[in-house]
Image (cartoon, rainbow, N blue to C red):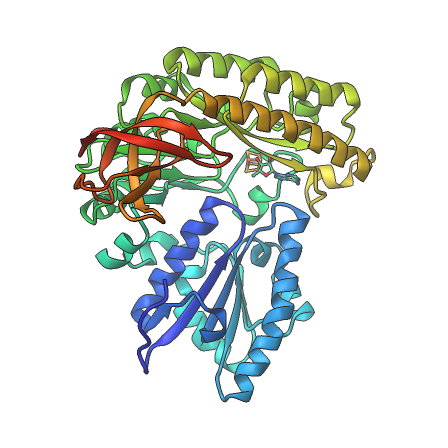
Length: 461
Ligand code: 5AD
Ligand code: SF4
């Protein structure tokens, strides 16, 4: 994203950690600072304002910020010796959780700003000129009302697929999770505002939207009729926006996987056959201790229903191993659930004690080597299932949304409906970025697939 240097322009560098919500927020921060004369740079040494958009979900993620800040202290000093001013900003969930403590530990930080306040960045940066500033209040105003829309050019540069926040925060209070504290209570954006964002993206040529939220299937935004709309209803309406060929959503909670949403996977052609549905554990005892409010059987029932509605659907999940009190037998329950579902993709983590969450104080913490061993076993199994799922693609013809040019002349790279990366030779085809092509999968490697172009289409999924 480096741009031709403009002598008077200021440079912004944003580094995001963690979830898609942070990726989205990082773009909005650039949108807020764009009208203030900031252009994004990919070179941190070149930046007048450096934003670390942080993640607090696990200890490792949070600690990364501090090592990065150590490096930035050196950089800021070097720039100062050349007469250049640098502002260091910590945004995101570590900012929300630790607030002023960050500045105490790392005086290099000029500004700490929480996820609900970054629409005030221009003002906060101005205030930070005369001393450190912290803003982690939950504001009364809706930040989305204060975020300028990105220009058409900026939208296009970001690619043919875009995230749209429809819901933020979480009321579920899983015993291990900081999200209800860092992102706050669950809030859904009104349907009209979501649709306006989607329409603007579609007009700029964006073909795929991923509706995001910490608990996106709990969506209940106000509709034009004054009633609360479900995610299912919202998706049906988003599908009517001209140009939008593909709709995804993430992340979901099993309890909110209602029949209407499941039916969307059967009935709405734009709904991609992919569902990320975190289960965390396959043990009823551990699920209860985690306050997940469902057991393994309920999760499997939801999966069975989704598969009945859309048999080819790719399923993905999150797992935590070594939650306090997890025994070998509990872990075997997780392995059994994994074998039963055969996920196409998954994220798995060792339980990490998070200050302020109920599980952090639980007595029976699992020893580190036990966690490590369980994680290795689980990941090996998940990887085998992922590869088996991908192997099923061989010989199939799939619609591939073209995202970019490949490394070789004439080569294009895109995504299958199942989020698999596919590259193929399109020399002489006239296909362009944003088109959807029928591609036969002819070879597999660990992280991508090779295809052969068999047909072009412009607007189908
Ligand atoms: N330790 C380990 N993993 C966690 N996650 C959330 N909190 C923790 C924690 N304290 C994982 C969950 C969640 C994903 C986003 O991160 O699996 O679904
Ligand atoms: Fe965290 Fe649970 Fe809410 Fe997901 S549902 S954000 S894991 S509290």
